[in-house]
Amino acid sequence: MTDRTPAAASPAASPPTSTAGAWAAVFAMSLGVFSLVGAEFLPASLLTPMADDLRISEGLAGQAVTATAAMGVVASLTVAAFTHRIDRRHVLIGFSLLLIVSNLIVAFAGSVEVLLAGRLLLGAALGGFWSLSTAVVMRLVPEASVPKALSIMVSGVSAATIFAAPVGSYVGDLLGWRFVFAGAAGLAVLVLAVQVATLPSLPPRGRTRLSTLVELMSRRHVALAMLAVLLVFAGHMSLFTYIRPFLETVTGIGVTAISATLLAFGVANFAGNYLGSMLVARSLRLTLALAPLAIAGLAVLMTNLGADFPSALAIVTLWGLAFGTVPVAWSAWVSRAVADEPESAGGLLVAAINLAIAAGAAVGGLVLDLSGVTSVFLTSSSVLALATLTVLAGVQTGRAPARA
Image 1: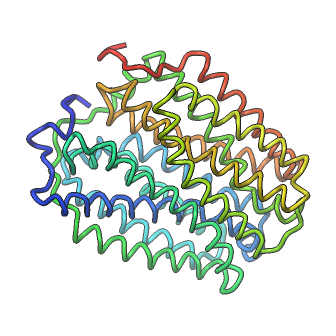
Image 2: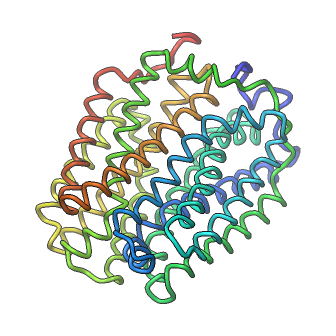
């Protein structure tokens, strides 16, 4: 970004005149995150019935997640530049419309090709929304309220984690996986209505250039951080995408118990957001390093103790708690270590996360089809341990100068 003035402090970025209206808009952003992330993670709870219905392998069905994340990478890096002349309100509403269309395409998909096409549209909406979200929130509220507003927006991720997978699994068993995606489209319509009613006009400001992303990646501490992000989210996503096959084949539990386990993960993940904020206040570097290490250890424990349901439930719950600290910590990293270019750094972060999700789901699916679900967990634990080493090796967590 060429405009380096903090968004909340700029006259062009002044918040809505009504304080209540500003926070209503922040809530609308959180709802957007909830509906987008919920749709992204639905295949994790519906993998088996989707594969059976479309007569494909579970590994191939898992590529629905890969397709979403791959398009998310492209969108997160390009949307800001390609829409720099358009009011941000209109762009965000457009992404919600795209989400509705995506869910409907998936709900009526008769082949894996149509399924993947629908998921690509979701990736465009997801990557674009996330890449603009931090900058938009910074324009909605006064500068002193930005951290609180960002935490509210990110809570949409935890809420989606709590509800999407367990509800998707349970409802999918009762009414079918297609009904779940149709319901997700209905929810997106409600979210769209809230956004239309609350989001103020946000005229574009400054000029976003793709060259800024190249400049950021030339900074050593940013490049190392993006590598760490890739490893953390790839390791986590390869675990989460194939958790249902593990619980079905290794733990040997049914849909009701699987839904309860995923719900426990989501509730713990929500608590992890608050734990993460406390840990970040003490040591950002330690938080960034310990979370993937903890998940790696839990993945190994799962391969050894996961056949016992109480043990598996406890391990998955702790996993949710540990992962809940991750988005909080990396959001804090952006605000501290790349304070001169927070919008562009946020776009890079989203791109790295989506690339990691794509890689994690793709590699996990390949390992699943070749060696079984236990091998997926062991491979992921190695990737997560490497993430911890990368953080400790040189990810800068203090405030950086304007140019590194």
